[in-house]
Length: 324
Image (cartoon, rainbow, N blue to C red; front, top):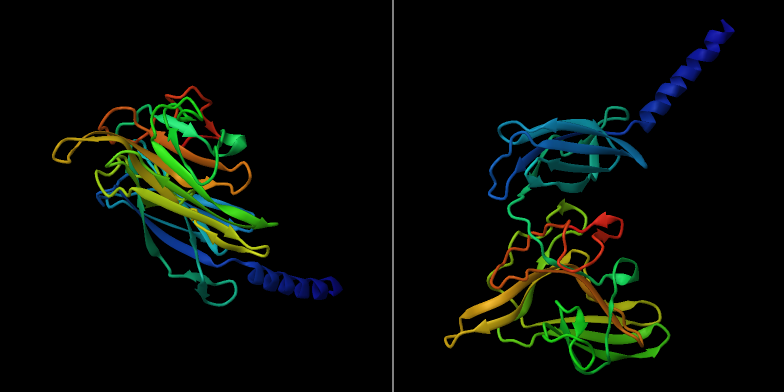
């Protein structure tokens, strides 16, 4: 009898404790579509439900409407994604801010929300120049020859043009201006310009981790290129006052443009940059970026066969393969 008197309060405490620790329920419907918005049947749709540093996943095949409904218990964040043969996988993170119900019977809101996942089709991956200048561990950043002057950089030779290197084409023209006034006190501006009428660069926003594995569209756009990109880095001793490097920034670019007498483009080379064009404001200032370049004139296809590279180099981006 004494044992039962002890057991009942213990069970009550255990139930109360489990209710307090129980995570709210999640119900999510994933709608998987292609880039035209048409539903994709038979895709593997997955939700990873989080519980601290651990979690569990659930996967279902999409129906003829591209829909799959998944449910589980989770902390505030979940990851959802989809894969199917013939498409690049896509992956996202979602966070919740409020739930309804009492302890042990809570639901994250909105309940049974429909999230649209877009799969980009694998169309025509091809071998490109992949120039990895992103830091000493991943590649070899380029050292700026000097300040307050323009220096041309050849993207195919992977070198500055003469007399500072072996390059022959001023594909990118860099100019670094600024000064250091004290410890962690500086103000620098990096200007990227071009040597040919019609050359240029344009921004494209895409998250560096979440979204399609093919981060940018398959092809470079025909128009919309700007002739100059200006970035600033400035700091006082206490804090940054300018840092023009959002993590979701990417670029398309056009170089070696030739025009006819009427101003129409006869030939050009097209490329893309994953991430930002970074620079270090120091005595030996460096510039680093990851770029892809199609070697064929007027071919705007930038869907990379990431297992190949026209440059003789290791095909690893850190511990991962290069993104396509």
